[in-house]
Length: 314
Image (cartoon, rainbow, N blue to C red; front, side, top):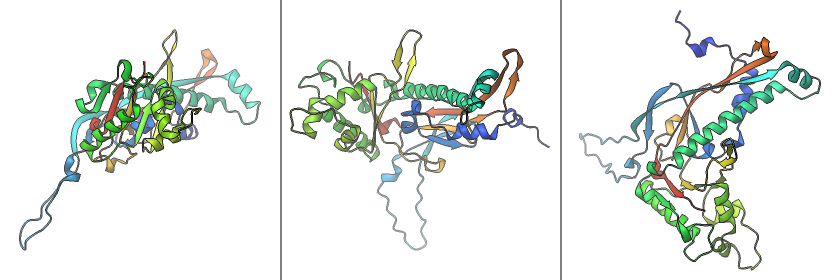
C-alpha cells in the first residue's frame, strides 16, 4: 500500500467543504473574470499559451499518395507551480452555543465563509498585482494617462471613448478578437459614468443621470464591465485593490482542454480545493478550529489579449 501524502492524510469535513467550494465571494469579482479558475490535477506543469496558428491560411489540398499536412495548436511556455494557502477559523464555544439557540444560525459555517472572504481578498490582490504591472504588457498594450488626458478631467483632450476604441483595435490586431471585458477601479468607474463625451453618446438632454453599467457595456460593445470594488486596510486607512487603473481584456472561462485559446489569464487551482479539514479542539481557548486549505496560482497567460490604462483618473 502506498504511503498517503499530507493532503490525503488530513481528514476532510465534507459538509463544510461543500460550503467552501460553493462560496463565490464578491471580493474576488475581478479575479473571477480576468483570471477564471481552471482545475488542474497536478501541483506543477506548463502554462499553455495562445499562438497564431488558429489564423494561418493553410492549404489543405492533398495529392494522391502525398503526406497530409499537420498543424499544432497552443504551446507550452513558462512553468507554473501551485502555492498552498491555509487559514484557520476559530469558533469559540460560547459563540457556537449562542448560535445554536437561534434556529438557522450556524456560526461554524459563518466563520468558514469569513475565512473564505479573506482568502478571496488575497487572491484578488494577487491578480491585481499581475494585471496592473505595466511591465507585463507590450508597448502596444498599455497607455499611461496623465494631465488633461485622464478621464476625470473636463478637457477636450480627455476622451475615454476614443481611448477604449483604440485599445480594442490594438488587441484585435494581435489576437484576432476584440476584448469582451472592461474592469475598472471604483474612481475610474465614477469618472466614466459621468464623463461628458460618454453621456453625449447616450443622450442629447442637458440634465442627464450617470450612465449605468449596462449602458456603458452597450456603448463600448462589451459583454461585461466589472467594478473592482475590493478594498484592503493598510493599518491606517482603506485602499482600493484595483487603484485608478482600467483593464480591457478578452477572457473566457475555460476548461484545461481549452487553455490554448487567446484568453487573458487563468487561476490554476488544484482539483478538489478548497477543502475544510476536520475541526479540532483548542482547549486553552475553549474553541474549535477549522482549517481551510487551498492550492492555486494566478497566471497572466496572454498579455496581448489585454490592454492596461494606468492612472486613468487622478
